[in-house]
Length: 176
Picture: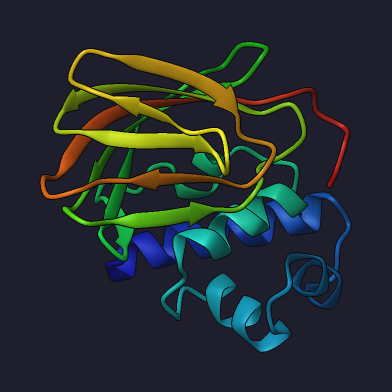
C-alpha cells in the first residue's frame, strides 16, 4: 500500500475508533492485533493485511469500504487484489468492488459483520467461492450470493479469475 493510502486508512481508523469511544487497547484487543500495530496503522505506517483491515471493520461495525475509501490503488495479498468501486449511501449499505484472484489461489476470509452477504459475478476465469463446506463453482457470467457473516473462501485453479463483488451489510448496532 502506498504512503497516501496508508495515511488515509490511518485517519479513518482513528476517527471511527474515537467516534465510538474506544481506546487503542480496546480496539486492538477486540480485533486480535497488537496495540503497537494498531498505533502504527493509525499513524499511517505498517503494512496491514486484508484480514487485519476486515477484522478492524468488523469490530468498528463499519463497512470495509469506509476504511479504504478513497484509496485509489488495489489492495492485495496472497494472490488476491480488491479495489473499491463505489460505496452505497442507502440502507442497507452496499459496497461494490473489483476483485482479481491469481491462478492457484486459495483465500480463506474471516466472518464479516452479522447479516452481511456477498454477491459475486465472475467476469473471466473460473472461481469456487462461498461459505467453507458449501462453495459454488462459477464460470464467466455466473453469480452467487452467500452469507459472509461466517468464514468463507475463494479458490481458483490454473487461470486467474476476475469478478465483481458486492457486499451488502446487515443491520448496524450489532457487534460480533
